[in-house]
Image 1: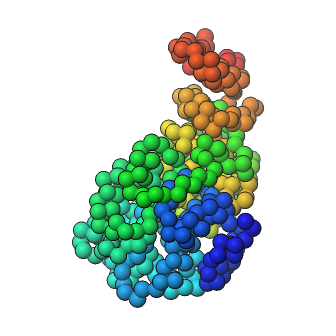
Image 2: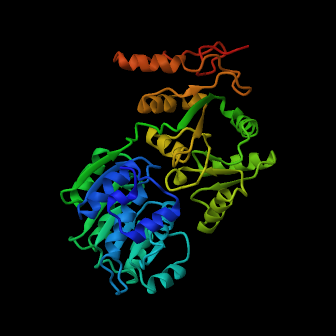
Image 3: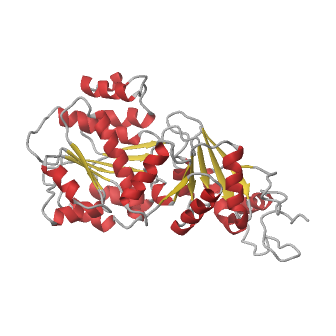
Length: 419
């Protein structure tokens, strides 16, 4: 399928798509749009950056537009785990609805509700919401879900991981059973399938770019580096590679703040974005980054999904994530919409097992950069990892002596420490 016209979309929707600059539907759009226009439920597995939002937004808007309702009632509800993702989806709906009379609003916590409440009073056809704020406004009788025709649960795996499952079930009790439901998840563990079976009716199952496969457009590099040298290495790479825009991921909020502080000392403009920041501060940091006023955005995993930054060429994992799936979502911020991207991962001595898990999960070894000025404690980077993976293949029992210590008893990843 080469064009959106072949998807049997109405002229106003096609004009809006053309206005955004999109020419060819992605794989998930090709698969999902006809199914949804046929009024069927969907269980979709799709990696971030595959065009998933348009895959459900476009058919929902077309179906709503074909049956305009002048009543000020919410007819489509999109549930999503984070404020950043909610805003991104909202922006996409506004783009695709440019030539039709469909009203879209977004609500999330962390900001005063008055402005959101006033917008809702003007009428809403499509509501994008995070579960917590939605339940708050429902309890205040500000939001009524009795007229929902289309329900989307986006990034369902993350919503469950963040503990939203009870909230979601409370929301579902207020939504009509007669509806079209769409559940999208980057990963499809057993608990997601069980959840999907409880809320979907004879769904069509679609899977695009499994999460175990990283995007081909992303080059992945590895720097083994002592923990205390990470700041120096980060400064070095930003300057050496002329990174005018780079997204850096840390494990903790405190870590993000420390990295920003060190970057500023080196005259590199940087801002943090994490859960301890107010919504206004997070939006300001993101806007500054998108407008290239800030060179480096340092984020915790709250931003791993939902950040849609055009022409982002670099992502750096300052700290490796605890799960391989999170690694996929982090690096998926680059290499989007056909652009090339470079994902760089730092790995300290303490993170070696996380690296093993990531490489096993993606079934590929990261390209190790051997000779850099801040990793001199290491000689060979992948010997131990290779041995570990070979041991696993042979089903050998775990050997506590597998990782050898050096003479000075320091635990290192390389085969020996240099003098």
